Image (cartoon, rainbow over all chains, first blue to last red):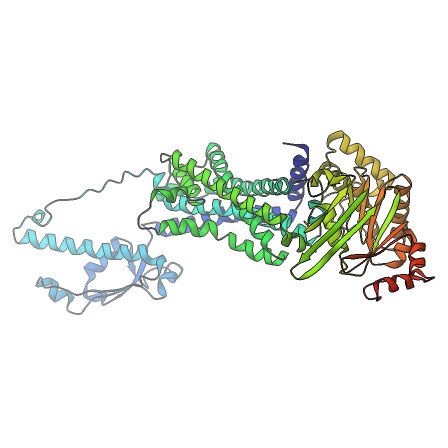
Length: 388
Length: 244
């Protein structure tokens, strides 16, 4: 590294590190992601607790006291029987069970009874409650059927030629898939978010403050200048990812993940590995953001372009998720490659180093193409004339 | 020594430079005077190696700018028309940054920075961040960063635009001192008084062409006018775009 490049790099880093607004932005984001993740998980865990009472509206409860009792054994209680506070969230659009007047007579004569259960499947938060009510009804139905068969001298096992015992061989760590998916998105986002402010400031901002032309007429090459800016911006991106990971590690300690059967651990080695794996992506993000910001005519225009670049880490993993068949090359795509790596590391799965390496190389190659293109643009007459 | 020969440059249909040639000698202050849009900034950008021309060449101390732009720039100090300071750097860091860009790093850079700070009496603000500096303080920092590598040639683009009287006086004195030390000083301006007050040589540019060159006295003689102002008007053909 020659002394001119060192000078450029030193100034870019000092300038970035003293930009309090940009640093605060990066820091806030690093805090924000994990906290959101943790509270979402806490909420999910609170909802998942099976022994918590569900209150439903039972119409015609007086026709089927045994059924009501069986539901109560499963903590499914009629509205109005519990404390007002506990019932509150079940009162609005309640899950409603309708028992017909003919229930008792039909049951006694072993005739078919029609029960109606009113649920709202669009309401995501009630899905597990809906399932529990359905399962409880099904269970009591099976119980009745068994009694009827036994009374008629028939072995009830005849109705079940085999039983299936499902054994999940996913480890507790692998079950953390959803958490890991979310974490991957937050880490990828942090790489892009942490560097935006500084990317705009060092490009469109420097031009708007009339500092760029003076630098371009110093005895330096445009390649050196862009190289220094690229390194400084990508350092901030990596710092963002690192902080997000540290915060996640810290915050997850407060989430009782074991209750969900999820084993999650983010130790120092994992944090360092993921941060290192994010380096090519940070360089790509920096090149992409600098490229967009330099194309813009003003600081404001640069801001709106750059906010679009933040969509990249969101859309690519999303698109990959919805691909029906994943061809091999998908694992090499920038962002998708890194996202896959975070998930593999965090789930404790074996890592496909070949595709990770190819992904990293491809990411760096794209960054180099963007940086090269940017260097050319900056030398062009159009760029020089736009300086003043 | 700075020299451009036969520069021609079009931007679309507009002829920005039309066979423009001039020479600025060592030990002299040479002024380029011309109305706004005459091609002054374009000519300077060719001299810095930022723009390429269709014909002609630019030279800094016998170095062809088009062939060796970096070598040419090492012999140039530039004082821009707008002071783009890095507001999060201190004055010292800002000046040392420019020293570093000219290859003066480490102790050499520090020594050069310290020397120019003392020369321009910037000691009291040297370790303050440039944010909030007055126009005069900014001017001094920009002057220091342009001179920190002791360039043989010093180019100023509209140097006194927006400067107060005190800052202008300091700047003019610096230019005279540099001239007396044998440096080559070239500055562009559309302010006539400034050119008349400072320059040993005046180059009058209009529509991308040199319309006259010489000492202020020679220009008066050439146009048959006694007042410099009248001479300029006679040379350019109108007083549009020239400030008295």
